Length: 187
Image 1: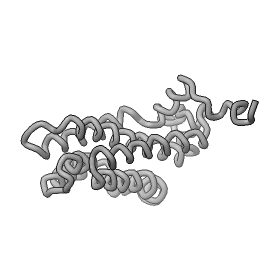
Image 2: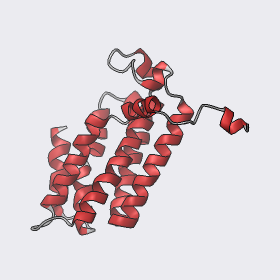
Image 3: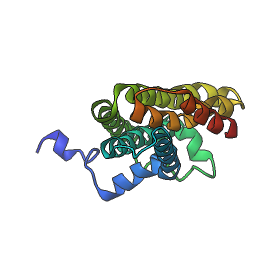
Image 4: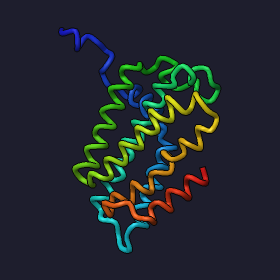
């Protein structure tokens, strides 16, 4: 048997999938996808085309889930000691950092590809920028540096209606910016 087959590290089973889905913060990401869908429906007087609706939901959802997993990966030491997060699979050793990077990269890459090929490039780039602002700017730089991180990082959480709007119209209109500001101010 080859070393790759002997190594159980990257074999997939139900427990590994469950652990990874925990890192994807599905409850939070359901709200992200929901507000993106609201942006889609508010962007057009008629029905959102089914292919855009479905592809947008999958693409945005996959990238948001990957961002959440990378957030957990970056914060694994902090998560291991906080009461609310100490049971997360990376902190408990149920899921390795390497596996998390691989799974999250694949999931995020698939999400971005879906957005690029089946929605439009603007939505893909805006979603990638949101991923980067949450996973890198907010998680790595702002969160440990200032208690105002949630105000500044709130922009990432306010982006989904813009993503939904862009998915349908391939533009970012003033109405989409108003939706962004409503969520940003609420945050």
